[in-house]
Length: 421
Length: 115
Image (cartoon, rainbow over all chains, first blue to last red; front, side):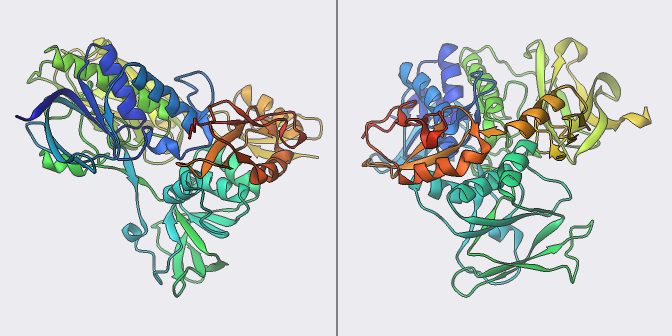
């Protein structure tokens, strides 16, 4: 007889723990968290810098401090979890297959599932950097793990490709530990990191940022010896004759994060524009009782926002288990319009929705002096003015339920420059 | 002496100019000049790093300065951090180095490492 759990949560990072605590507090007691790593906390274990928790705890914490508060909440509630445990399959009828060194290969039946497995880094292979294939090229997050958890220095002369926040934070981290960081190249004409990180991670250490530049050649027999960067044109193609060369032993890549979506296929779920699952306002996927939240759904820039989303997923799982989250055939579909990359949720079921519906999206490029317009079947129902909106900061707008009227049709979010109006 | 800096208070990222008399231009809101004056007269940062620890599980313990220290002292703090070895058991908030590098600020643990 297969063991049954009311709620199985895939991932014990900030999303998984916050979802577990929320589900528990809403009445679900039979919970199991499955975590691949050796500790609860996920990526926050290696994020030793501060700036977490301003919204959730009203103070600035480091990653380990933030995660410890959630671990304490999990432990206080005696919510069971398994570490070093890898989930390899979830079937359509919610049988979860996991394995670890103590139990071997195990299948359990879940009444509800929350997917909270986080995201992974785009690697060197994904962008095909021209030149040799020496050692010394690693992702920024991998370098962060080696330095901050394992205590190893990964290089002495460093260049960073991509201006994502992890890359910027590693530029500071390696500088503090005595490495020479020679520069950061960003293929886009604007930075993908927060201004705060540009100032406190690059300017503080006199590290140059090369916008509209990319690595055009890697040189090294067994270990990295040298890289070349070149300027790119507006089609992101390398402009010949613009080469600058740097002698480095390490190239860090901070070129994007992608939700861990390999389990979606096995459940027959199709990835959305975010490459995570497609969910409704209750964070429920197209499969009844399967929910998704955090970076496995869409990549967040603030863990505080992950926690808010995960609490919704946890509370929704509780509603589902109490038969209070019925499916209706009628629903509103949400789509990104002009200037918007994706939107979460992709569906709203008005019959179930709370009074205030949070809508989250990212713009495609930095835009100034702009209205964010929400239109239902072409009619503008809500508009927000913004001085500036940038891709590296997720936008969260609250749409009152009563503006949506009928439980059908299409809700589009678009960016409209002010001068047009 | 005049300064040019990017405001970090919000996503606008205004390019601020501070002149000899601490007049600030380029800001779109009143928070800009407050940030600029602090950043020009007394810039401070919280330093986060790791120190060695005699643990069976971990090689390093994450630490931070309890509050922000003057920016000019960042590498003085790092020099002390490099020489420091913590001893288990350690709890979050435990003082690892008192008055680190003469800044008047303590270096504290940011993780529990019990063994």
